[in-house]
Image (cartoon, rainbow, N blue to C red):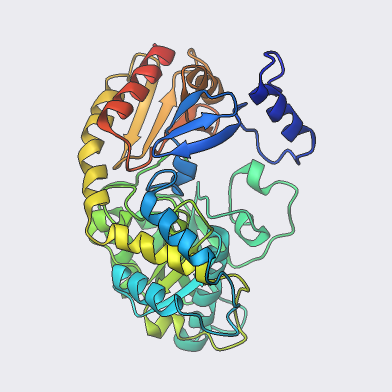
Length: 405
C-alpha cells in the first residue's frame, strides 16, 4: 500500500520508506515524528491517539519524563560494557526486578524472543540435570494459537501459517495442546516433559483470555507432575491487565517469568527471564549469554520501570479504567462488533465482516486520528498507554463506534 494519493510530507516519507524496506510489515500509512503520553504527531503536524502502545512496549506512554531523565543521565556516563565486566547499574536492576517477581535470580536479555529462547534452554537443561530426562528427549508443552516470537525455534511450534510457512525445518521437542483445555494439557504430560510455556493471555491471538481457573489448574498440574511452568508475560505483564502480571488474576506464581516490551519503557529493548536459584542456577558460565543483554543503559531504564510499577498505581489505574473500556466495547456488540474480550487496558474486538476487515477498520480509525492494529483478519486490538486520560480514551472509543456503526 502506498500513501501517495495525497501529496503530503507524510505520504512522501511513507512511500520513500516502503521503497527501500523489506516488506515484513504492513504498516498503516502514517509517519510519526514526535510523541508524548498517549499522543503521536506525524511529519505534517497531525495528531493521533495511540491505542496500540507499541504492542505494550509503551505501557508508560511516550516520552515518560522519569524514564527519559534516567536514560539521558545514563547516556552521558556509560552504555555498554558487555557481560565480561560488571557495571554499576546491574545489581540494582536485577535486585529490583527479582523482588518485583518474588524470585531469586534475573537473566537479562534484549528482545522478547531472546527471553523465550532463554526460557526454553533453561527448561530443557533443568529437565536433564534436575528431573533426569534422557539426553535430547526433553519436551515442552505449548498452546495452540500461541505467539512467542519469530525465531526459527519459536515459529516451529506456531500454528499461524504466516509465521511458520517456508521457514522450516524446525526443531523438535514441542507438544501443542488446545489453549484453555486443562485436560488436554494434563494428558500431554509424560516423563519427558520438562516444562509448559504459556501466555496467560494470548495477545497476538486477539487478547484471548482463558477460562476462569485455567491458569490455576495449569499451576496445580505442573507442580504435581514436577514440570516447570514458564509464563510468557511479555505483552500481558507489567501493568497491562490491571495487575503486575496477568498470572496474578488467579494468584498463580510460575517457575519462570518471561518479560520484555514494557520493561524497556519504550526506550531500549530490555527483556529478562526471572526464576529461583534452583531453576536458573542450572546455567553455568559460557552456556548462555548476550553481548547487549543487561547493558548499563538497559539496566538504568529497567530499574526506573520497576520503580514506576512498585507502588501499584499503574496497575490500579488500568484496572479502574477497564470498567469503562469494557462497558463501551460491549455496547457495540451487535452494532458492527460480534465479540469483545477485555482485561485491564487491553481489548480484542471481533469486527462484523459486513463492516469490513480489521485492517479496513484500522484505516478508517487512522483517518479519524486514532491508531490501532488488526490481527488475524477480522480482529483489532486496543492497548492504550496506561497514562491515557479517561477523556482521551472515551474520545477514541467514540471514533471506533462511528467507524463500526
